[in-house]
Length: 100
Image 1 (spheres, one colour):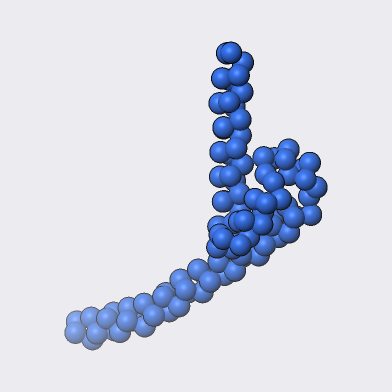
Image 2 (cartoon, rainbow, N blue to C red):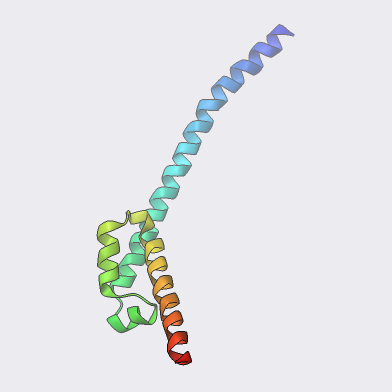
């Protein structure tokens, strides 16, 4: 019985570092993948015309500002928030103007 318990403890001690290495590797791969997807999205946005950007609620200065200030991984989320706020404010101001 003592032999079985010793083997169990030894096998879990070996499995834990391997699990940690796997978790770190998966996390790294996910971060690199997210970085490249964000980089590609920013490139595509920068290739759009000003009219196309305005159609989705962004300006060229929004792209420049986010590229300089936001961490690369969070850039697309920051742009989504800018576009959402701009659309929301336009809807609020548009409904106020319609009431007048």
